[in-house]
Amino acid sequence: MSRPRTAVAAFAGALAAWPGLAPACEACRNTLADDPEAAGFSRGVYVTILVMLAAVFSLAAVFIRAAMKEDRSLPAAKAPVVPEPPEP
Image 1: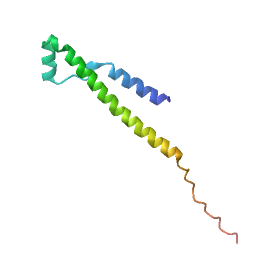
Image 2: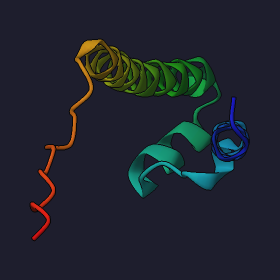
Image 3: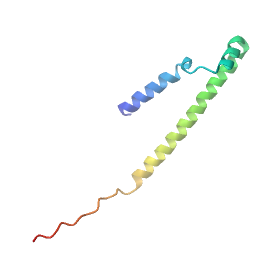
Image 4: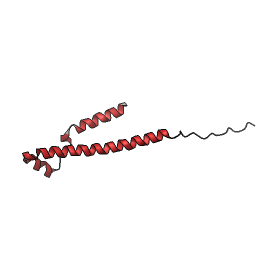
C-alpha cells in the first residue's frame, strides 16, 4: 500500500473508532440516554450504520478495481506518427 493510502486508511480507522465524533440527533440521544434498556438498541443501530458504510465503500472499491483492470487490459494508445518534412 502506498504512503497516501496508508495515511487515509489510518485516518478513516481513527474516525471510525471514535463514535463520539458523530453524535446522534438530539431526540434519539436523549431518549436512549434516559432508558437503560435501550443500550442494546443503540449498539445495534451503531453496528448497522457501520455495516451500511462498509457496503458502500466495498461496492465503490469493486467498481474502481474493475475499471482499473479493464483499463490495463486495453491496448495502450499510441501517439500518431508525424512524418518528417522532406529535406530541400
